[in-house]
Image (cartoon, rainbow, N blue to C red; front, side, top):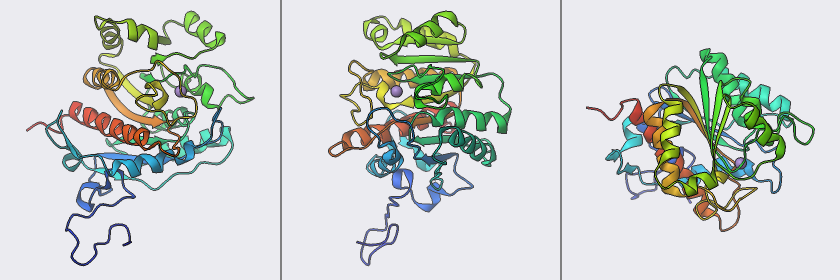
Length: 315
Ligand SMILES: [Mn+2]
């Protein structure tokens, strides 16, 4: 075995860097010139059923080394066009409240300029911390949240903390104007009541509603809701059907299919301004490499849609 990134005599000139998202070469992943920064954030504090999300970022990055750079939907080796830099792993402290504060402080201090921040989780409780940090850095007061997820995550507290993964969207609502949720199929009474009593702050397209939707009305409603808005996009892998991604702590049957998920993401990217996104809750398990690969491809596809909306492939 050679060191990562070091050619052996006679080896191909093409060298993968397995510790980087997509294994990109130096030119395509330089910190200063890359238009996207990937932040591995292996937060794993409050996961309900099976722990393991701490291994998620590394598994996504490892699988991303197998993803083809060529993306037919933008007809080029997209990442080579705009550049993706993988930041060092950020490991927050092991208490939910301190983790929230530490993530917010870290993101607030990242010199992003107009770069796209892509956070790889890690459990879902990282999302409100990232949003708080972006809000501190950029002063957003009009940000909306779009969430693909099996769970609403709208409990006010869970397991004695308001910073549990089961409360991540409720906490995010401290910093965003509204949340638009898709794929939801596992909720409690408190969450149903919250959505019913706060229709201007939380809107849900359940997995069942999406499944029954034969004429694309849901996507049209989503488009109307987010057009012209600034959006943070959070992709919980359990929003997808377990036939797409099963390596997650709390898998739920009846989720979003691969192409339906991509259509949601395209709708968001083409009609709103996506300021940042995350992919959370992958929990690698033996034989689960298809899930890691799907998550890696999901992140890359989403990156390319955001970059397309920013005009990087024009001309
Ligand atoms: Mn979830």
